[in-house]
Amino acid sequence: MKDDNQELADFQVHSLKYKTRLTRKYKERKPYEVPNPMELRSVIPGTVVDIKAKEGQSLKEGEVILLLEAMKMINEIHMPFDAKIKKIHVEKGQGIAKNYLMVELE
Amino acid sequence: MSLKKYILDLRKRRERVQQGGGEKAIEKQTAMGKMTARERILALLDKDSFTEYDLFVEHEARDFGMDKKQLHGDGVIIGTGTIYGAPVCVFAQDFTVAGGSLGLMHARKITKIMDHALKMRVPLIGINDSGGARIQEGVNSLAGYGEIFYRNTIASGVIPQISVILGPCAGGAVYSPALTDFVFTVDKISKMFITGPSVIKTVLGEEISMEDLGGARVHAEITGNAHFFAESEQECFDQIKKLITYIPWNNKQKAKAFPPKPPKFKKNIDDIIPGDPRQPYDVRDVIKAIADDSDFFEIQELFAANIVIGFGRMNGETVGFVANQPLVLAGVLDTDSSDKAARFIRYCDAFNIPIITLEDMPGYLPGIDQEHAGVIRHGAKVLYAYSEATVPKITVILRKAYGGGYIAMNSRHMHADFMFAWPTAEIAVMGPEGAANIIFKKEIEEADNPDEMRKLKVQEYKEKFANPYVAAAKGYIDSVIEPDETRQMLLHALDVSVSKEDHRPDKKHGVPPF
Image (cartoon, rainbow over the protein chains, first blue to last red):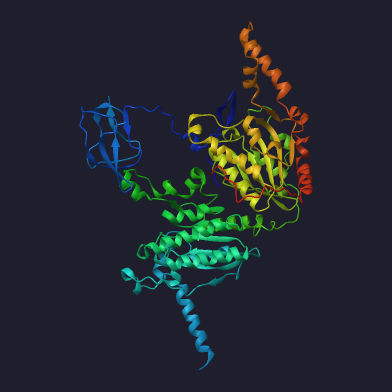
């Protein structure tokens, strides 16, 4: 099997720095991002079938913001806490990927 | 009436069915660069050894016009044969017949040969080349898959099960290979995924090619679903044949012994290992310097390359090698390498293959992605697999054996049978730099020249603890050996363990951290 990964790099494990090859998977890993509670992102890919809330509207925890159809289920997207809708980034009928920014709160 | 007439009739019937999906479909198959199901079986098995079963099976579907369709062999060929004289059961899906789609009778043929393999206690080889479930047969085709998965599971650890992906293997179909011991793939031909690019595009709007989503390379390097990667079908069959020589027919037997041969590798082991513990080397060179004929049959070469697994022979008998690879990611244990090693250890244990562990690793890989990916439960698999294994377990510590990694890599504390260490071994709770920084924190901070003091203390720690003698003094290491003595010591250890008995408490089964 061809191995096109020959380059040696510095690689720190605890207190020592080693000379070693890096795997493609390691190089392509996504850096960690601190989740922002004011951003509602999709946890599953799907289609926005209805939007119940409006920009500028203040909603209570548990109230429905929009409906996301995914895996043959209509999922209600709820307010995680009492807040105001700052911006809605999706439209009715739009297909969205996982982790797509749907709604911003303030 | 003469008998001849009946014989001629049989021959005609055979010939017709053996045509599979007919000339046009075969042409299409060839145009895709693929062999036909029958050609594949003949290429894999010993000459003239294939005996076919169920040639005349036909489907019984009645809906959607299926009653008017004849599907030769119902799209799958099954039978028995030999590989280097060893009996095997085999099935090969025939893509030329209704795209190799799986209906009830197709599945029944497969489960028939699976049952046969299990009863006869011989390896099962399944060649997958199928568009998936035969939609016209509805829930019957789902039932078929389920019966296959059940048998894969029941036969697991009893007979070797080999899956060969030579075409599409999509949707539910992927779970049969996933349940088997070894998955073989061929570049540009194998395609494995749960949902294909078109569904992904419709539902998610994400575009990806079939090759990038679930081609051979992806499964061999990224997902770890494949154990072997070949450039051509012929190379793939050669790999399977070679694998068969290393493994027993079933869990009650040992792999066939070959005439012992000394290693071919001429390099001195001492010269392989750099003096500086931060410099890499290829641990496969150490294996080649140790193994019979310097022959090492590596498994999952590209996936989690920071650990090396595979078969070799010592004095003619198959052994499994598990070795940290300093050349890749410094040889750390992480989620993928833990999975890879643990499964291989369990395979060896199930099939009576002694395990030789070569250790040189700085520990588990630190980082948020690793912690969040579950390095705790994945890493635990290595501890579980080694502790559970009752085959002979031998460890040689080459260089670094730090912290949790030292415990995990078949240490005395996982009840290794033999613990050897080279004089270059550094067996310690962590690397000297880290340890000195903690233990001598106060002295370093209060010194007039902290950097000088740190260097001094690191050196002091290194001399006192970063060696094999502290562990040897406690009996955790049986013997500190010269690198060039390694093969002799391993051969001796294997000789001593020939009639090893090690029993576990009676239980239905353990609950490993899957």
